[in-house]
Length: 234
Image (cartoon, rainbow, N blue to C red):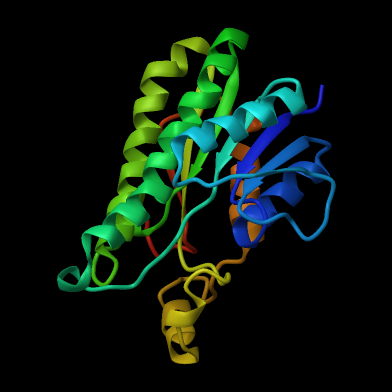
């Protein structure tokens, strides 16, 4: 039986690569995002992740359309560069609400279905910032650290029901997010931090995400897997 997969933030960047990876394996995929994907065979459900009620509504509709859910991938997120002294309360709330609170809400929305079925996999896309970040991105790093904490809590609470919960911590991956804050010099400097001498591509993250949701990754839970080209090794 093919997997039934929900991907938040699946219309572009890393999310789109994750959708393509699961679809290539024959999965039925539902994308939850603000804008529709540019192509592909995934079902689309418009959602405002700042609104918990709308988020629950979209997840419910996706589950109904798919006839259930085997995999949830939380990939939606926003980034803002700001020093600690410049982060406003509104900045903090927006970043934490989309990156962390929405992750909690979607996990809560799919868990009853997975627990009843006695199986399922949740993969939350966190960030290298959860382990190493902070300077110039305090609220972003805090939001991604929260995602890792939610991942561990889900793994501890739901493992006895056959549900795995893991996080993926990408390093520097060139996507639209953050494009307005980086220069060619930044890209060269970041590439030099990796023993592999390059930055990540969305497909690097998609491959690990797919693995964690596959039978091959079935004994992994509560982990925060680095996809950083060796920039972070803990």
